[in-house]
Image (tube, rainbow, N blue to C red):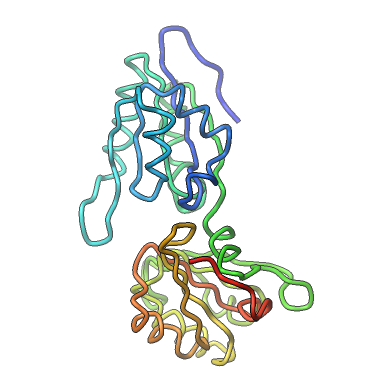
Length: 254
């Protein structure tokens, strides 16, 4: 969806870049990059796509590195508005899909409140694509009729947590955890304490959709230790549920 353009004003295109492989960038995303005067990018976006499709653009890196370099969201919002008000086509380039833990909705609201034309170009979500590339279907007939995608940014016992982990434990759904490397141990304990079988298959996938993709599998009770011993580090996704073992023997990428 988009708001109509206005004379004399630039525009903002919120582009989901997909899970990392430049080949999984959508055609609409490619065309947006080709039209860009400015690309405001996250570190998890497929950066090779910028060099290939937007060599003409000014590139502004606003990546947020865990416990490292951090660009406040308010500053990102200001950058989008400043360049659009100067009459430029601004591509806000994100990894995965910008509306899934990408704060794309906030950026849409900022632009519309400021009267800036804005368009959303969805991307392939890493929450589904990365498990698939690891041979894991997030739903599977006879095993799982649904999937819950949750943020593991804060641990279950953290007062800031808004996830109902006990409900997930008894839901029968596949659980996909994004941004949960550091909190994987507490997440596993919370699910087990709430009734999820500790032998439930789980897998952690790091650097998904890249040549460096690697997968660690273990029962839920041991997935945190296995991930740590396997060198799993952000960006990584963890899948919890019987679907992890659904396609046993499937060749994994990476």
